[in-house]
Length: 546
Image (cartoon, rainbow, N blue to C red; front, top):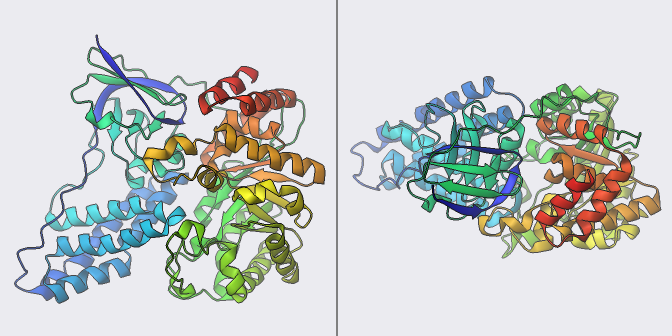
């Protein structure tokens, strides 16, 4: 038996092996000819095709739960987006393109804009491509690309997986996932963790393996071994269903709140059902993404209240609009920028448009009164203590007593002591912080290893913030994907982090892990990870302590 070894970024723990099934690549680019004999009739096919695709996705969403349900619902909304359908129809009637080609080109315009925006919006490119391919397939009358029907337990290999495909995976048949592209914060990574499937992303060369009998996948180390001989079918070893009493606390009583990350009412219900002690990150921009005009205060109030309702009497941290160049919203009339990730985004939008922030703060305050949730607010993309002070004063003027900021720009981490002088708390956004620390776009597979949340350089910045929090006697949380890793959650606690916020599926695992260890173990794990030379060594040092 011969073998070959590849290396990627392990994003969902566990070791599994089995035969390989390659996921079909996207459909070829549809031709621009022949011209339709009746453009109006040809254009009329697009709307019904979009409705069929959206209905299928909604049907799958109804059978799903938690993160998977939210992803499928979002993809269904994209499929039914009147902007995409309308633009494609115009390309048919105005340019005499066949319907499949018109959909392809219309989606291409959206994709180009999202890629130029970077950040969160660039993460939606995979979603748009997925919707595009499903629409084109429906118009052509062929099966859409994606995960084939599995006849038995298999290791799935793909260039990347569409969120809708990942959300629909059957953990009883999918032993592991390996993708050539993607990163630690991709949908594939998040959903693989939620399903308990070992996964490795950014595994370059996996598509070039050719005829292999199977793969051995280690989602902890990121190592993938390809074998040409017989490969044993082995699912990831289960340690049994984790049990957690719903209170984030170490075995010796050190308190670390375990909170949910939410963006929609469905997210909030899932987090509450999974035992979240509250919400550490409510992404309010989810209420804006499809808006062509700024929602009124009343509309925002109702939207926010629907998310806050499951957490009456519990703490909820509401992040104000994280929009701008990286999340271009039409009603803000964003100016084109050469490097949007470093431009006017997050709180920076409010410096020129403070009235938008003030209306949002008013709506948040009213929604808090409506629901009884213990609401705090925090601003994204804060670079200096002066910016933090400006935001806190506006929040207080709106009647919100507790205000803080996101630490996702290295400058804010380096001046955390000054920031703590003007805020009530901070929350570390480790996804963006890693991206800015390493100058590595988190959506580019070639640099995915740099965005590994176990990177010692990133952890050393977290340590600076933890030390400043302890000195100020104020809380510091983590709301990036780093918090969803049970071992890393212990390290973060050892670095001085007092709350951890994550997707609903990760809550029980993190809460259960904290309950099994003592706080001095967390501190020892943190010291070992900080002293490590690379992410792999950091993991090994931490796990030895834990």
